[in-house]
Image 1 (cartoon, rainbow, N blue to C red):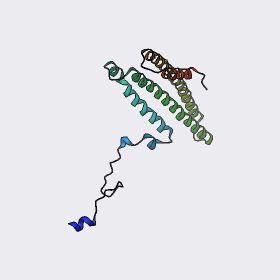
Image 2: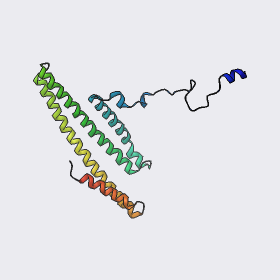
Image 3: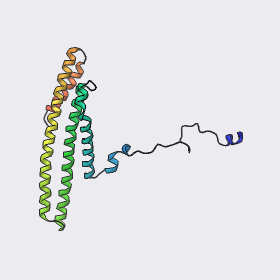
Image 4: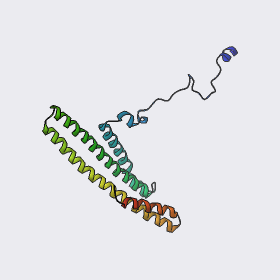
Amino acid sequence: AMIAFAADPPNNSDEPGEFDVEPPILKQNLSDELAEEGTPDGDVARCEKKLERSKRNAAGAERMWRIGVLAKIEVEQRALKVIKCEAEVASARVAQAKGTVTEQETRVASGQATKQELEVAKTVLAQLIEAEQKAVAKRESAELEFAEANLRRQQRLLKLGSAHKSDVSNAEEKLAELKGPKN
């Protein structure tokens, strides 16, 4: 028995050996970006999944705030994230529609599609651009409201002695940045 033990010494090093067990790769641990990278359809799908996740997170937040589990700022942040995700989805759909229009233009040039199909694609693109503009305006409005509420909150906390002047100045800077001219 001693000869067998001496012939195969135990592996006490940090390096993996033949008996180390690797955990299985779980599907939910794989990133969506690896599976759908580079495709406009994948980008829209990824944004829609993100939107659904943020909607689920925000759904029960108000009730959780009432019972004292979450802070009011967390509820506001979750609602803001839903609005941001909606704007991302709208932008991704516009990018996808632009790709479709470009594809239709090349197909019309080569004679594989009719001009009517191209016009339909352009009409859809125009509708999606309008929806994107509304979503972006809603996002900007929500961000501005959140920044104003945060500034008021920080000012109240400063009066109570629970915040620092730097917190108030940071909130003021964020609000000024959002109110500033857009490029």
